[in-house]
Image 1: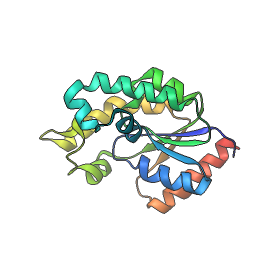
Image 2: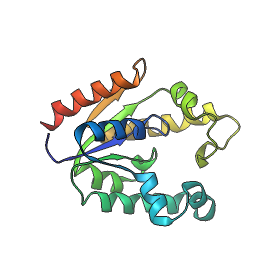
Image 3: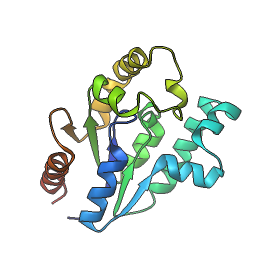
Image 4: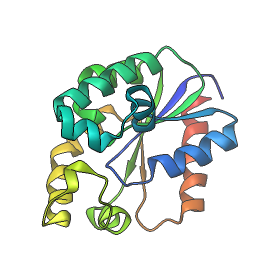
Length: 173
């Protein structure tokens, strides 16, 4: 496989970090989670950034992180679920490699993160309803930026990794 970056997009809680780490290990690449990258550079959590500065400031930080990571090669990058809302960030990242959409259902997301209290956008009474609404708002963006879509429903983690590796080989060779 060439040195193009592999950029994982998808809704929060779909497994971008889990799959990204596994794929990076199997391909001997460095793994970067953009949320962790931002937290490290800002020396505070995403929740704190949202509380202190709001979503718009965080989205600018995502755009800055994408621009910095676009200067690198041979990475596996797990983006924040909302990074697709920034055309500049997605243009920067997509110009460096292959964008893979990890497509989950709202029910899968709720099962994965429904009890997570660290996600600022999910601090609502109706978490499943919020997930459904946000996924519907973002679906067109995920589809627009994806070079490859990998469905997650009905697949184990190991089966999804095999499918993901197959798709990467087909598209990066």
